[in-house]
Amino acid sequence: MWYCWGDAQVGRLQRRGRQSAGFHDIEVWTLPEPTRFAPGEELEAYLAKVCLRAYMAEMPESARLDFLHAVAEAMGGPVID
Image 1 (cartoon, helix red, strand yellow):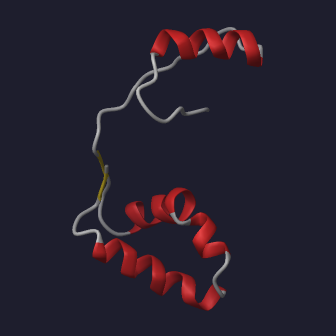
Image 2: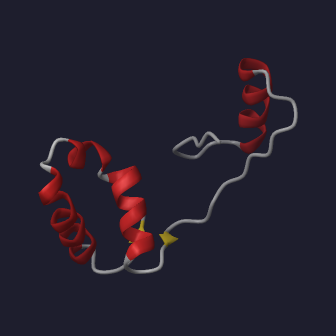
């Protein structure tokens, strides 16, 4: 699945997927913002894999979990805007 940031037009993305990538049957849609997560594990998994991946890769493994918890707590709620 490919996701485009910003105010993408659904029709344009469908054409682009068919033309440049060779896909024939694709679905493209936009998501409402802000995105809400369940607190705890769901939010932290998203943060670790999407938002903080590069930062965490540079840290010693022993420091990653504490960092992740601190970021999630500092957010004030499980919402990505």
